[in-house]
Picture 1 (cartoon, rainbow, N blue to C red):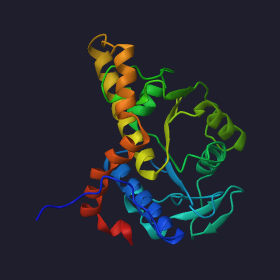
Picture 2: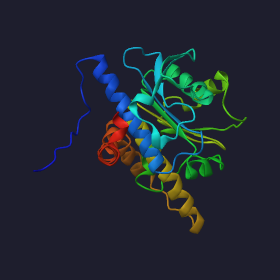
Picture 3: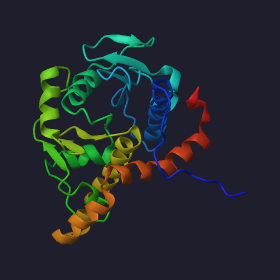
Length: 253
């Protein structure tokens, strides 16, 4: 029997259904980030806005390894920093950054940040990604640089500066820090992070052996229109969702 995979985002009859869906995708994203090696000690966080209480977001418990996170472990935090639901504490940096991004970007349902190896390596150069591959074109004219570093982000003012640098883009490179991506779903935010990390890796590798050839502007723009849309980000995540759901179904508990 052929397995049918939906090629359209889910629709919901109740807020509770949508909330559970978002939390499942959030927990799955942590498992995938761990699988891909985006787990550096206590660093890193992914958030998703609650569909009903839109000034609240769900986030990973502070200090819990990404590979161990399940739906029931997620905590709900409001924009004041109060833990509304859950038994764990929240990462101060996660609150400082994500609360300001969710405030500044009502369209940003989810945001992802981690200290991935190639992302933080590329960030130390203080440069945007160049259109040297088809995948990198997903970020052509659609990512920014936060050209500053003043230590671990614990203050809301620093979070506001990051949100300002992000603007209306899907991603921002935090100099000497790493990558941050947003999307209108957990799926797209997680996918943009994954593919941006790999684009950093590809450019680092290419520049280590020579001078990469840029895709011409006309075609870089066209490719961005073809592959950099919200729907394409959501769609690209679906095979990963199916993979992790089959390999690690315990995250759904």
